[in-house]
Image (cartoon, rainbow, N blue to C red; front, top):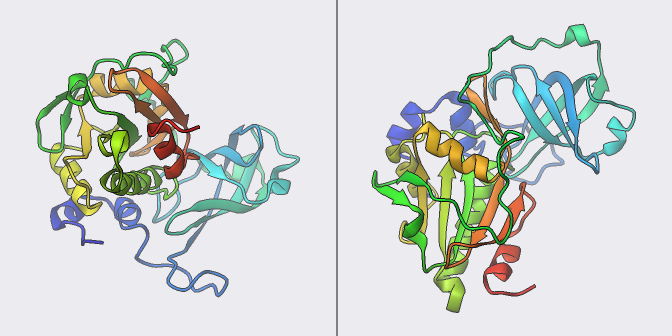
Length: 302
């Protein structure tokens, strides 16, 4: 892995640096962790705002997590669903957040008094929301909506750029500190890039597009440095952002939840395969998709 550019580090906040360097700094010397694995543990409290159907993920509006990330509403993986078996939306909890190089989860989850949770009072920025209930939701078979973005070279980028090639697109922002969110999407795209280089037929013709939903920070310069840090081949893998209306337009089209909170972004995830004619073949929501799954979809395998 190449060293991150000095200008990128100079502009990133401390939490950003931890996320982009995959938590290489610091860690904990617990013997149960693999040798060389960077592990960090954070104590926090918050209020449960939602549950996944299998209750393996919960949405928590948490306090500021010192030296990691500010208060926001975040989905957290739960390793032991028994710990939340009797919990409900609105319950106040304490928990330990564990963050490794490639994963994160919470445990030691306990109910606490609501008065013990210290959440800052913030007004929601009017341009910081996306994927409202009235937004149209793209489905497989729909045409890719038109967009006008700026790529990592500072050049205009629109829908026609990728016509004639299979396109896999996803959403990220470079400051995301959670390893199994944006950093996981980027790591998966790095592996997809290698599969494309080693592939043949339709796979070899495929392109990748990472769209930032943080256009206020992720300028062309930042995206180019971020891509270089990921060893991106810009002939295959494009990074792009745009002004706020354009950014909101495409996140809304893919029903990606997006909200600015405390200097960072609470968000959902979506990844899509777009055919050569601009029709959407597959949409994967969340972070559970795998590289072999996407490769199989590109190659037309079930």
